[in-house]
Amino acid sequence: MKKAEEIEYLLRIADNSLVLGQRLGEWCGHGPVLEEDIAMTNISLDLIGQARILYAKIAELEGGGKDEDFYAYRRDVFQFRNALLCEQPNGDFATTMARQLYFSAFAAPFYQALTSSSNKDLAAFAAKSLKEVNYHLKHSRDWVIRLGDGTPESHDRMQAAINTLWMYTGELLTEDELDAAAHGDGLGVDLSLVAASWEKIVASTLTEATLTQPDSTWMQTGGKRGQHSEHLGFMLAELQFLPRAYPDAKW
Image (spheres, helix red, strand yellow):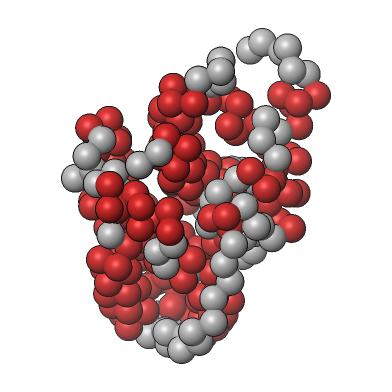
């Protein structure tokens, strides 16, 4: 696998973590209860920590004096490779939990498979991250079930969130040429196996939550190729303001 392709593949993983971590960080101080405020902040920190590790690895591969801050703060919106799901706005608490369930149900089997990567550093990273994403999955499943099988209003809100975000799930699970190349080289994973695990996790969760799984097969795609919704640009404007406005600032 060419170095440029390896960098692109790692950026997809790292950007998913950074963007979703930033979204969850927006809940800090706004959680529905104090315990949940802290929980979402901790998940956000887990994800951003994962992104930092990968950005440092990418900087090492790419060279040129770049560091992890460059990839977070110095790239424009079309240089990001995160899936569209990760950049969707928080909405209400049900929307945030639906988004987290969809992503974590992908991340858990993905990182499990990635522990067998031919790249020892990437395999070690996946093994460490797997402990975190398994908790993220449990946390989101618990809330989807609690809200779905709760009051009539919580059920309706959770169902609406599940329906609205469904069209962003296919992009996570569909293998393109880069995914196929990474899998064939041994660096990456077989997304068809990840998709099978994802479908089981999501189906069982929705059943337990008394929610109906959407039957639409139409999916929004493009994020993995740098084609994003307007939401990412607004998010990056906030995320990147300080280091761009004061490039020589020191903490």
